[in-house]
Image (cartoon, rainbow, N blue to C red; front, side, top):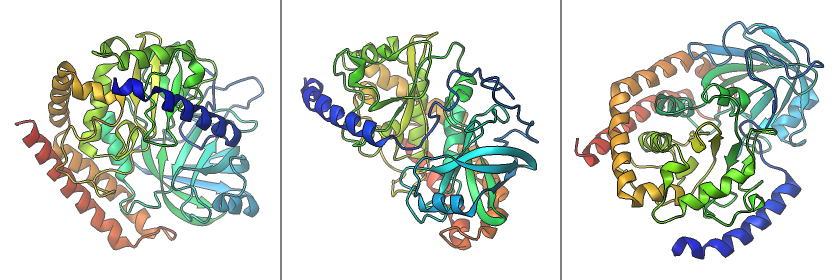
Length: 423
C-alpha cells in the first residue's frame, strides 16, 4: 500500500530528527509540562514549598476587557528577551496583572516563526511557578503573543472563538503590556494546553497530552511505524504531562487503526470532535494545525483514559481568514489529503458524509451574523489600545482596514461552503 511504502523512510528520518531535538531542545509552545502532577484548580499550589498567590481581580482570560499587564525586571534581562540571547532561561520579574501584584514570576521569549532577535513585538511566556511562587488564578503560566505579523491583531482570537464554538479550545483575550514603565502595546493572551485547561474539558484522571509539530510538514506524524513508542516519542509526538494516567503505548494502536483499510476510526478517535476541528478549520481557512497547507503542522492530541480515544486540539490558528493568501472559495475537501488521519475522513464514505453534516451543523450553530458580531466586538474592544501601540509593525489604517477584510472573507467563505453543501 502507498502508506506502507513510506514506513522505512519515515522511521529513519524521525530517528534523526528525534536525536537532533534531544540535542537542541524543543521550541516554546503550549503547556510544556509546567505544572505536571499538580491538581488543577483555582488558586491551588503544587507543593508545600510554593507560596500562595493573591487572587486575580478578574479571570485571567476575561474576554470582556483589555487586560493590563505590567512587568518590572532588570533592563538587561528584558533586552536579552528582545535579542533572544539566552534561550528559554527564566528571567525574574514582578508582574502586575489588572492591578494585582504577583511577585517573582519567570519570563522568557516565546513563539515559533515570530521568535527572532530584534522582534519589537516578541511574544513572551510568563510562568507563575518558575521560582518560589504558586499558580495565579489557578494557572501555572500564560502565553503573551505579540501578533507582529497580523495587521488585525485579532485573527487568532477570532479563530479560537470559532473552534471553541464547536470543540474544546484554548481561551484567549487581549492585554496592554508595559515593561519597566515603557508601553509595549497590544498583545494576545492565550491559555496553554496543560493540566489546568485539559481538566476544564475532560474528566480525571488525566491521560497523556502530546504536541505534534513535525520539523518537516511533508513527514506524516500519523503514519504507523511499529509498536515501539520510542519511534514516535519525543518527536514528532512531544509529551506534555510528566505523570499521566496512561503511557506512550497508546500511540501505536491509534496509528495502526488509522492506517488500516478500512479504518476503524471510531474505536480510537473522538470522531465528532475530529469533524468539529475540521469544520472549524474549513470556516476560518487556517493554514496550520492538523490540516496545514503542506501537511500536519502545530496542534495537540489528547488521549482520554475514560473513553480510550484521542481528541485533536487546536493551537495557534493565527494564519486564518485569508491572512496567508487563502481564497474563500477553496474546496471543503482540499486539505483532507494532508495526512493519514484526515485521509480517512476523505476516503471512507461514512466519515465523508458525517463531515458534510458537521459542516452544515457548524454553519447553523455559528451563523455568519454571529461571527461578524464577534469580530466587531473584539475590534471595538481593542481599537484604542491598538492605535496607541507605539511598537506595532503596521500603521493604524492597516489595522482599521483589516476588520472589513476579515468580515468580507468570512462572508465569501460562508457562501462558498453553503454552495458546496448544496444549501
